[in-house]
Length: 64
Figure (tube, one colour):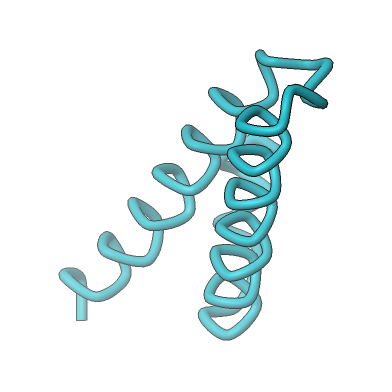
């Protein structure tokens, strides 16, 4: 997802998005450990998406 799309969401939606992405990251790590992970690039995407969402949340927090 792009940063513009994250900025259009509310704080609650963004926190839920972080929660979902962290769950997905955990599941991907588990799949990698068990040898079932097929799309290794997805780990990087998820990690970067978490960072994007947290950046938007911090921008809003600091601008208040």
